[in-house]
Length: 255
Image: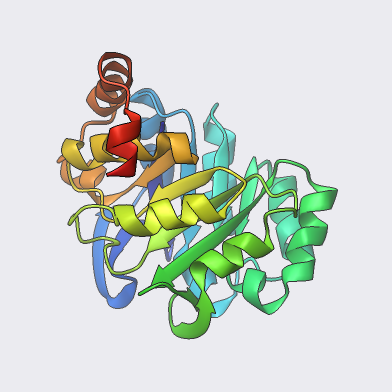
């Protein structure tokens, strides 16, 4: 299972929000390039970027930081936040991003996402951010009545690379991932699922290994890495060791 460090960009700085609340911001680093290089040096195999300004307003505020990060790193970079047009998605891919993540537009213009996936195989990811099982959009400022699992099913045959499943209630809280919601998402999706939200310690990461056979192939970690509750090198090794020593049994998976 791939551990993917997250850098959330707000006005060019690395921050974290508590449950997506723009009024509850914690600043971690004013130099996102330096932070990205640090994650790479610690062994990250991929970096996850979120343009929080773009997610809220739809405007590309952090493009200079995004370009600088891509240029500085040797590992793949993916980005989400405010990508709501075909032109914008293709512009970001032209920057050198490995993958672009689309959330709001997956509900509002699903055919656009499917067209992008066909035009860019392996480079389009759907971000499904859910609150109590229902999809939230526009930087989590709008709540839909669409089920997260129903949305996942709609993209099963679209050719997308993955789904990033974020549980808003646990995001930024360090309270642990919503394993039940992740299992439901993985069961609904025919593409790999990447978990996001709630990881606060090593035990939380290890708990996700039981979902690997269902198709949960990665986990995005933010605040726990910044706070030092999780060390990226140690976590990567621990996940590998536990998988080899104690692979999940059918009884565990069905529990």
